[in-house]
Figure 1 (cartoon, helix red, strand yellow):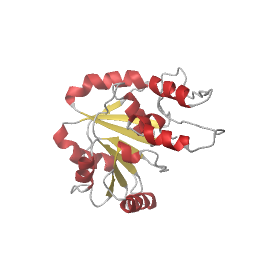
Figure 2: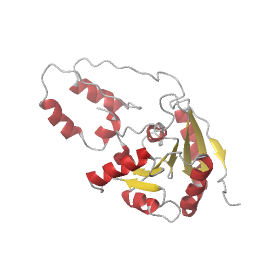
Figure 3: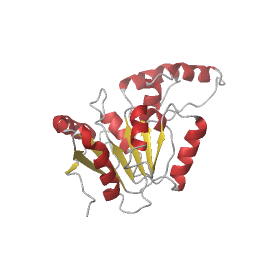
Figure 4: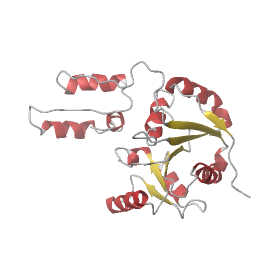
Length: 232
């Protein structure tokens, strides 16, 4: 089960029980996750026989990939779409640069992907689109037809998309750990297989304190930069 913490958190426990209930008694079960909260460990002990934990992070304060550059841009909510377009142009130094843009809702995904600034280069993926549209969107993104994939968290779970150059979170992550787990999952979409990548977080002036707490939790010091302008 990949992305174990998120899959179980959003309510797939019953389906998991049905699947495991139809498997042979002798089987191998493996859970993979960038974060392993206590409740996931407790669940593993209940559903698995003598589970063994392999921790590739350990006590390291750095919870994110060392190949990822972490950038924080302060911006008011009403300027996010315009600033996002400038950020993608500025940090995507080549026209082939691929970006995943994480949004909080399906409505926001549709709005952003259809915005005047992004509609020619972007495609959306969320829970309301059909499987055919989903496959078409992913195929277009992987082939380079679209440079930007606008996605909700749930829709992006389990996707194997290599060579993503930029991850953008247009809204400050929220969760029991102050958004740390969510940030780690999302930023981990870039900088894979030894490649470098850039993770960009947009935050409002009121979220400066939360940003400092997030830095401590994930062991990363953000590069705090002003929004770039691509106008001549």
